[in-house]
Amino acid sequence: MRDVLYLDQFEQAEVLLKPQRVEVLRQLDAPRSCTEVGARLGQTPQWVYYHVQRLVDAGLVARVSERSVRGIKEGVYQASARSFRLSPKLVGPIGLRAKQDELSLGFVLDLMEEVLTDIAVLEQTSGTGVLPELPSLGVSGQIRVPPERRQDFLAELRATLQDLFARYGGAQGDAFKLAVACYPQLPKEAP
Image 1: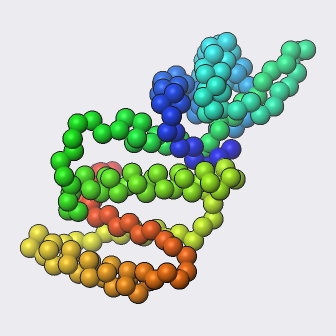
Image 2 (image 1 turned 120 degrees about the vertical axis):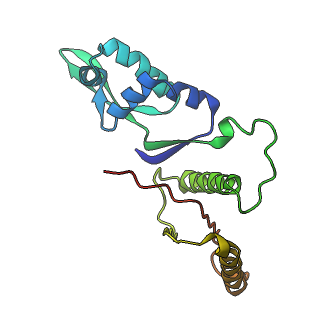
Image 3 (image 1 turned 180 degrees about the vertical axis):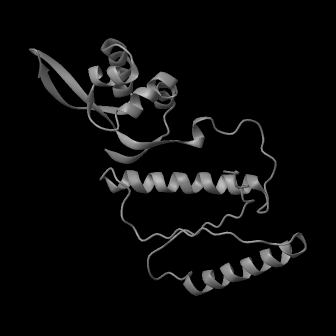
């Protein structure tokens, strides 16, 4: 089972985006027969089999084994991945997007879509079906910037990043892509 299956084919997304199929897929986090999934969902094995076959045809589920139950061969299926990510390119841009500057949420959204696509390609090219153990770094934290200091913060952040680019931007060593996003923190929900 892969860690992530990045769906960039419309046909795969169309098969997946049916609530009953998502429920079947969730039950296939471990190898199970259609009879077992049906019992968990309160559905007949035939109903489950229909949906499992659509998922198999789309490459979202695989038949991993079979067993004999009272003389009848019964397939055992499992999801192809632990999680599925839909490519933003499945829909693509609709209409013209206003020019996004680096201080807009639209710019952050474009950046995150680019990062998601890059990670999916790294996973696909590893050939192992799991996210490769590559030297990577993820940093997340909270900062507070008063409105009157936002420009100062942006200037300091730019200067810091430009310094890093100057020191590590040569032709020697492994190439890394750096993406920095800063967006409003969501309010914490009351318990």
